[in-house]
Amino acid sequence: MAMSKTTNTYNRQNWEDAEFPILCQTCLGDNPYIRMTKEKYGKECKICVRPFTVFRWCPGARMRFKKTEVCQTCSRLKNVCQTCLLDLEYGLPIQVRDAALKIKDDIPRSDVNKEYYVQNIDKEIGKIDATSPAGAVGKSAAASDLLMKLARTSPYYKRNRPHICSFWVKGECKRGEECPYRHEKPTDPDDPLADQNIKDRYYGTNDPVADKLMRRAAAMPKLEPPEDKSITTLYIGNLGDVLTEKQLRDHFYQYGEIRSVTMVPRQQCAFIQYTQRNAAEAAAERTFNKLILGGRRLTIKWGRSQGRQTVSAAEATREILEPVPGLPGALPPPPEAMGNNFFNLQATPGMMPPMMIPPPPVAPQFTMFPPQIAAATATAPIFPPGTAPIHYPSQDPSRMGASQGIGKPWPEE
Image 1 (cartoon, helix red, strand yellow):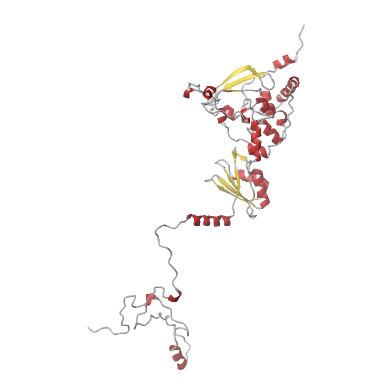
Image 2 (cartoon, rainbow, N blue to C red):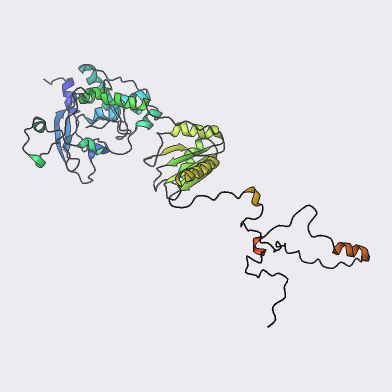
């Protein structure tokens, strides 16, 4: 008599037998030549309680061995790593991602409903690509601003460090430097991060790491627009050597018309100037602390006004300059009684004050004047009435080494 096909028989036929695990870059490690041990149906999944293929490996030197904790069905259902249970795309806890994308967790908690739900998910996963997430995560909308702010763009290998040596905490560890565990002070037991549960992280409830990240997001600074309305330029930093002007223009053109894009390859930055102020404000608000291009998180700041920047630089230079010790101070201005005698020359008795050199003679005119007008013009004074001649010290004969007897004939030999 043939036996009926029970639920346990169906589940046994659908146990997971994978060739490679679903891991994030942090858990996989920085060594490209990694060796893994594979144990078929080695343990049961900590979520759906079905046996699955367990992988075990060492992510790097001086790191602890890691293994997969959940099956690939549960991993794809939430799009998380099989080991750390963090989101594969953003590296964040499930609670933070679901709150940002407004995903409602519909996984049942009871064993019977969970078993039926997982069977339906297996059928759905078989119809889609092996690299695509399933369930509500696969149907979710695009990334939100919160995820772009908190997303981790580079692996965090510090998470793979060995556990703390319990013998060292008690003062009984005799291995010294050969001990494979860490000799550090453990976390305060009152710290919420010291009590983490893998099921709470998977279901997105009471996760202390998620609460810490949500508080960090609430305390993040905001990019306030400058008061000068004429500023329409944004500073884009951390470009690296990969991003080009075309990539920046193609991305930032969606916020408004761009007047110019200035690249500074030496400083790995660029300046994007918009034609309108509202376009620059929209670009700064939507890209600050959440723009990732070419795998790099870009730094977004407001540019400075060119006039104010020049004035501030001159003021900063003026503040930096200090007087050199030992040099004489500035000379006082000459007294008003000195007049034009800037060399403070003393009048010598019997000597006529030096006169200004008369201007060169004017070229003769062809117009003929009567003799009376010509004689009056010849005897007219050089300076206008009521004004004194200008004194030039360089025209003083006594200062230039001339003799005191002005107008005397040379002595006869």
